[in-house]
Image 1 (spheres, rainbow, N blue to C red):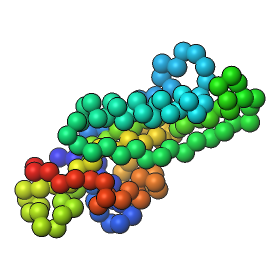
Image 2: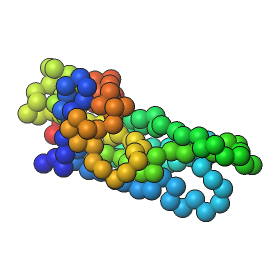
Image 3: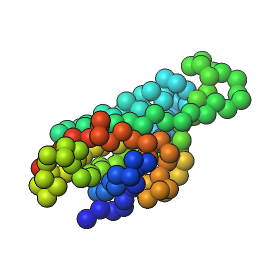
Image 4: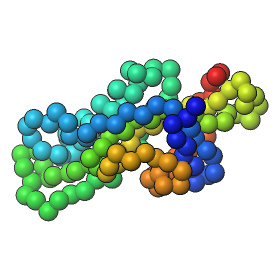
Length: 143
């Protein structure tokens, strides 16, 4: 049974069966949020998802970045991602219409960043999340 449901802009309904939330900058002991640190955070999120769910495809939604009006440091300009990094396991009806929906479902692991710990539910999910090209990213698997 799904924890929550998300409706994509296309009308496809996704079921969320697992979610992992963590602080974007947890463990940042030195330095400051910048492009280099953020690229490592994003690649780390993908690595975590692929390690935990090796048989499922992963897609990272390009996160919004903010650039506070502060003096650049040794690593370049300050670049801040939203405070919470998320990975969710989503499923829906099969992408391939030839696959029986009783036997098959489409699955995708999605990574994204958001400002708070709210759940992506219904029509209230982030616009970039609701715009996912599910048919291009998800794969059909047997239930």
